[in-house]
Amino acid sequence: MRLVPVALALLAAATAPVGAQDGAGGASAIVLQLAPAPRPLALGGAYAALARDPYALFYNPGRLAGAPRAVAAAYHVYPVGVAAGSIAATLPTGRLALGVGVHYLDLGEVEVLEPDPAYGGQRGQPTGETTEGGEALAVVGAGLELGPAVRVGAAAKALHLGLAGASDQGFAVDLGAAAGLLRGRLQLGVAVQNVGRAAGVGRGSPLPRTVRAALAADLADLGGVRTTVAVEGVHVEERSALAAGLEAVYRNGAGIGLLARAGFDGRVASGDAASPLTVGAGIAFGRFGLDYAYRGAGPLGATHHFGFSVHLDGGAGPVR
Image 1: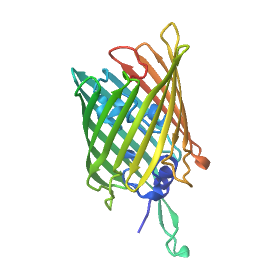
Image 2: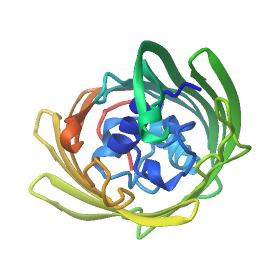
Image 3: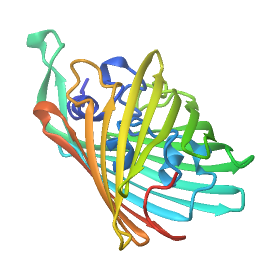
Image 4: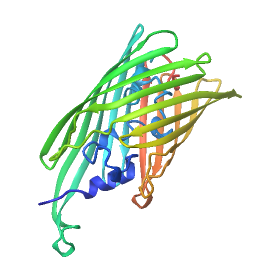
């Protein structure tokens, strides 16, 4: 029996907030645990109440309602030669907004191991062979404005998993809702994600069913600097944690926006290579936006995340 655990385990330890040892979705649904874009990652994953942009599709489809026409894409560089990317778009039509997105994970070449009899089969030894693997997620969703401050939404997901020539498919549904209070200065959001059957190459594993309850608040708007804080409680399978993020936006007289972000991801377990602290930055000019996020990965190095967005209806700053 041959094994291919090394790259998968390292990737989970370096990137997946729920941690490989928790078994939430196992290694078969890593793409469901990865941040699809720099902004949510830099904010510690606290995104279910914050954004109305294409990537709301991956956190709370209710936040799609009221979103502008926009297209966004991202590319992620992980340790051990692994890469990922995404593209998403929103199309509003009156009170209804449609969203579509794709998120992929390229595992590259994975080293093939076989059980080492010297250690009773508990450790692997290289065979000199490599194989390839990857995961892809396609999402279609919609958000509806029920009133001036209440929105609901739903999304359908199709998942493809491949490793060493074998493959499997999975399907899931997300549901979400959002509400605005205090003339929009306080936003609330709830979402239930990844409701579907088990999936996995060789042996099916439960998808990482996730429940989010979040709030985002504008704290200050002084001297041209707008500060927003987001706090989110996340429950994945049998584990609950807290995520939080802070975003500061400065716009000059020419309309150029400079953004700084920091976050804390409490889903990172003790002993994980991934750092619970995240940082990021961005710039918005006209209809265009550029974003970057960074996360340390201990002895594995770091993860780097790059994003680009185009708001077809106007300025590219964060939309609340």
